[in-house]
Length: 278
Ligand SMILES: Nc1ncnc2c1ncn2[C@@H]1O[C@H](COP(=O)(O)OP(=O)(O)OP(=O)(O)O)[C@@H](O)[C@H]1O
Ligand SMILES: [Mg+2]
Image (cartoon, rainbow, N blue to C red):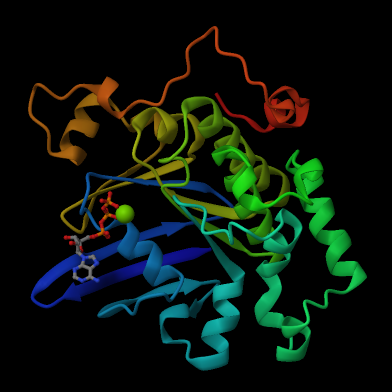
């Protein structure tokens, strides 16, 4: 259960996020949409305590995570892993080590200094990579992988933390449509199979409609839409994006051509198809 209550973030006089409130019950897949500067990233950064809120509360199972300090705040950060548009991997490091870095904060300085990982941790990292269809990439340098594979490594690193919530800030904005779909399918799979809440800032309407149980529309720091994917009609979208009658949905689309084929083996795995929503 997530309750966002009147959360505000000011930068000087300007409210990047202005008294937003919403509630999410159960492990939903939540999409946040809105034009550039609407406050989407600022909200995720407050959830993850990367930035402080100016006012309001975010209750997770009744506990105000905005009030946590020190070790408690760091513990919360490991329970809500963050995924970024640019993957944020260590490019020259191998994939398995990148995934193991998901649990760096649980380790002593000596363990970290000498890259000492327990056998159980290494097995766990490999299992997660296998689950995401990229086990064979484990020994390669992260920079040698495609963008879609790198984003799955970032998701694997997040899963290593065993988070309750996954926050994804435009996770597919740097990917071509095929890889975008693989990454979204992966997030959906984790949401459905593990019951982890996913909150993703998305820049395309079709992705929000296809994957999200719930869509929050933000404009100028405020929530201007809160509903299901079905309720996200063209006229609602026009309102969220503040566009006039010339608003064209195609401009916010990542649709994949019907005849497209992936050369990625994960694409054809039945588990991915099963986890997809239409
Ligand atoms: N550190 C900062 N200092 C000052 N202003 C900021 C800071 N971070 C964000 N802002 C401002 O807050 C507003 C919301 O920014 P935010 O990055 O949350 O938007 P966004 O919805 O994620 O946009 P985008 O789609 O471009 O990523 C913007 O006007 C931005 O300029
Ligand atoms: Mg942003």
